[in-house]
Length: 154
Image 1 (tube, rainbow, N blue to C red):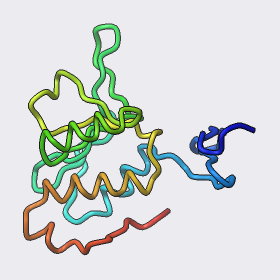
Image 2: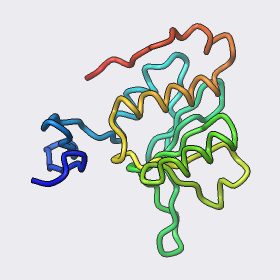
Image 3: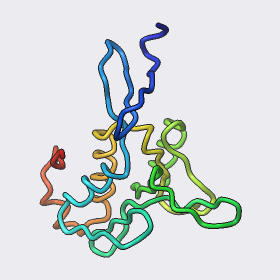
Image 4: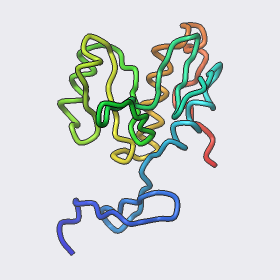
């Protein structure tokens, strides 16, 4: 069947699944996972948009990627923009995991990375969204979120 470290993609009614080592199945993240995690965090506001756009304390921490196709703006809900701590973290993600993260010239100079949702599991997405929320939330609110916090699963 090939190298066990290579993941096979299977079609599932709701999402794509990856089959990895030992045949275990892991779902890949999608916009529903972004929404589930973001809305479970304290004091999050979803801004009406064509995709998703979440803020805490008036500051954005994760939103749909606004792509350009044929000269027009297209909101991509399969790709998310995430706030990261600084340029060093941005570069570490983009250079270290180019299959998952990328940057665009429009975000040059900003601590933002672009994430292909289908390239991460819901668990990894949750870690990334919670980290982005912690960096944008007011300090007292972020301090109140327990380490190891998990969003409810649906």
